Image (tube, one colour):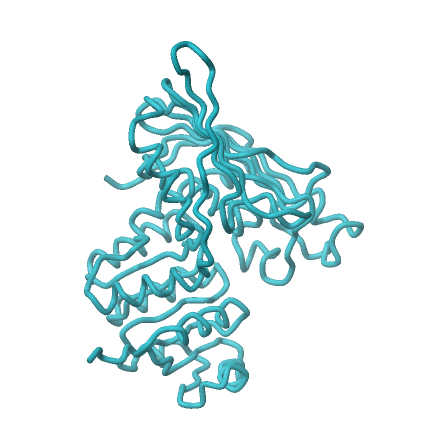
Length: 360
């Protein structure tokens, strides 16, 4: 008989509800505590989600004093760093919502704390659980593309700007890059084994978010709604990254992997003004190569699945905790994702290329 895993939730916002639903799908998992910095919000969350056995705290540090097997961190981005470090130091395994942090220095400390304590830091990139993402990874890493020298990824929504905490730099740290751009980066970088980034040259703007014609909270909108960057990696690889919450265009194009022996084109799933980015399922995969001197294009059949990708990431975390396995999506790896976002922010501000400094 499996031991019941005890889980705490830090942050009682909307995304925390998705964690509750996911944990409820799993046997022998109990949510025993919820913490939120807003007085009374944790208790309201517990009432709303009907988990009366859970304790409510206004201070997450009190939650961390409990005997817990893991915590889901669902706070605004700016609080990811401190709550994660404190949770690891308190001996808790961590399921952290993306993005990993606000700055690269924070991400490095979080990963180093996980390594030092031996507890898990798992970062929530649920699109990885689309089985078609595994197809992309298998093709890229099989060698059939030859040497991959250029990658283009990102995507854009014609209209798809959130509000609330997402549009405040003080709370979110960044806008479209932190919200949806990190997914596109993860899709491409994970397929290539997460190469080490070296430099970033970037541009960003927020012409739509700060315009009352397009956003009802324009007066407090101070993050980017558009960004583009050229990132250089080790082994003479470059990545062209572009992301947008809003634009006068239907698409910023698919993700492309260009190799010396073949190419791969991947489009995101979904239609409409809020689609066009890799925050969910894959829409199509095409393989370009030459056969006996003839240009050939093959559509790779997609796996038709009914998986709830969010639930799958939580299930994977729980199984890793239960079985003593490594983090399915380790923070040590996602540091490189955060390094790129950090570099884009710095480069956009000073309007020139910046170096990325990562520990060995």
